[in-house]
Image (cartoon, rainbow, N blue to C red):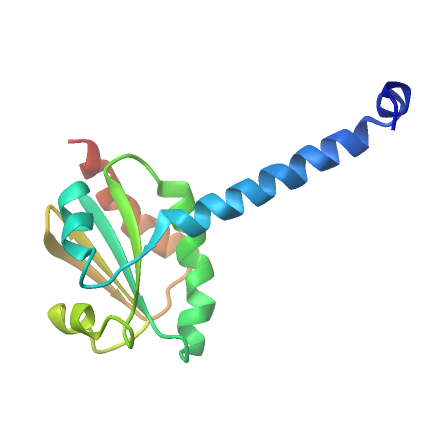
Length: 141
């Protein structure tokens, strides 16, 4: 494609840029929600004032559905000092046991190393954002 054709059809260039950006954001999102295990939990808690831990399992239908909502809200609330983690209760049983998680999906909200709130089951996006936003402001203090 020569320069004249690109000028004649700027939509192609824009479409390519948007696709590139979408792939980049997908990669970033995958990496910013950390798979938590007993080996990385302590460092995650030490490095961040606020940590949201999403407890799930591969076989849990409601967990899989609610994870999209969790990711959407996490994307909006990502700021320095805040971390988002995903705990597979089967793979990281010791983490689930440490926090006595008995129902999934569950989100534990941890501030300065202490559990300050728990969300059990699926809630709507607005409710989830409201509850999580309450703690995000503490990250910079």
